[in-house]
Image (cartoon, rainbow, N blue to C red):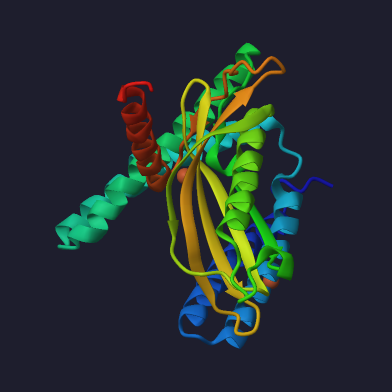
Length: 288
Ligand SMILES: [Fe+2]
Ligand SMILES: [Fe+2]
């Protein structure tokens, strides 16, 4: 039996579409319920979103699971091209004509992001076709979240966690991000812009988020954000932020070349430009 062209295939496509929409809808509803402080409702929306995502995944497997890598890339290129050159430019024009300047601007910016998606997929397909090595890594590839419960040996007698403990956790997370990006041994070269925003107490759950913002020939700048969940109330707060500059070294201590960083979103591009400005400023400083 051939699935392609069958009525079952039609049904699968319809179901896949609905599940995707449901998944996204419940995901956003979760955020809204969270913001309204209704965490029971948020929990149920979030659980259901997960469920719908699983349904969509199973349907995707039936529909497209057997596609080979290159044809998946070609499909991706077509989709992104269509979004970048038709969907969003047309949408921007309509929004502009109807006087929705902000939405028109948003559509135009998305059209640029979709064009970037297209070019990333295009590069990959071209390199695969030529049998060339794939080098660059995305921000997502190395992004890391690490959680730890704060225990008595990490705190002073009044129950506040030592700043040094937090620095160690942040340094560890930055090391994981850098190692994932370059698959080599990273060391910390510099810490910049560390800000202690809120004290951390015993029995707080500390969640350290790390992601790359900028990569030069051999250095990697990792943005670290520390959030704290009060386990008794469920309230989250931001406690610390910093930038760690990591360098990968070989056994002799020599700096290694690291893979380039692929930025996809507007936010990633903004962070990359800011990181690059910090990098240039450091380079311009006279050496001690
Ligand atoms: Fe479902
Ligand atoms: Fe896209």
